[in-house]
Length: 355
Image (cartoon, rainbow, N blue to C red; front, side, top):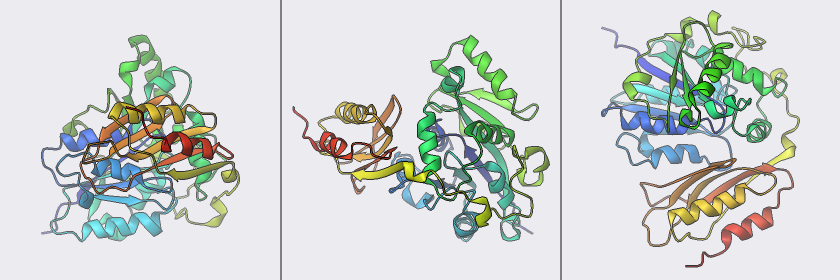
C-alpha cells in the first residue's frame, strides 16, 4: 500500500509581516506532531532559522530546521528547494508535516509548481498556502510596515526579477493563498480591520478565509489540515503578469535582473554584552533608528545569562527573547542603504553598557 502523502504548508508574506512569529506559535501548539521546517532567509547569517530553532519548543530544534540561504526560494528551486525536500523524504521516520517559511519576496506560484516534480509529487502535497499580511501597514496604505526594508531585501538578492513593483508581488502572494492571516490586528481598531479586509479581498481568490492574529497566536489545527492540493490548482493562482510559464523552471538568466542591488549592503557586527534583555532591545532600537538602517537581526549576549538574546528589528518594531541554546555565534546582521555609517553602528553596538 502506498504511504499517504506528506502535507506541506507554505507560509509567505513580506519582510516584517510576522511569518516567523506565526511559525513559532504553530510549533508550540502542534501537540508533538513531527514537523520539519524549511526556512528561506536573506543575509550573511541565516538568523531566522536560528530564531526558530532557538524558540525552546520541542520539535523546533536544529535537526528539524533546514535553512536555504542562497537566494529567493522561488528562484533556486532546482538548486536548493528540491534537494532539501529529497533529504526530508529520506528521513526515517518521515516528517508528519512540512512547513516552509519563504523569504519576504518569494513568489508562491513557482514554489507550489515545484510540487509537481515527479519525485516530490509522489510523496508530498501542498496542504495549503498561508499568506501573512501586516494589517497595520495595510491600514496605513502600505503593503509592508517598512517598504524600504522590503526594497533592500529585494535588491540584495541578485536572483530576483526586480521589474515588478512590490504592490504586484503583494497581489501575487494574496492570489495564491488558501488562508490569509492578518497579523498585528491588535494594533488596528475594528474600522481599520474592515478596511484591510476590503483591500485584501481585492486581490485574494473568492471565498478565501481571513483570520486576525495577535503575535501569531493561531493554533496549529487552524493552520494545518487545509487539504488544498494547491499543486493541482495552479490556474486560479496565476501571478500578476504570469511571468512564470508552466513549463518554466524559473532558473533562466533571462528572468533575472541584476540592477540596483549595489544600492544596499549588509554586514555583521559583534555586539558587546548587554546588561539585560531590555538593554539589548534598546541598543538595537537606537541602531535601527539611524538614517539608512533598514533591519537588524541576530544574537547578543546578556551578562550572567547562559544563552544569548535573539533580536530582530524592522523599522520601529524591535523584538527580543532568550535563545534555548548557548552555542550560538554572537553577531548582528545590519541591513541598510549603501553608505550607511558602519563605523558609527559598530561603535554603538561595541560600547559596553553602563550598570
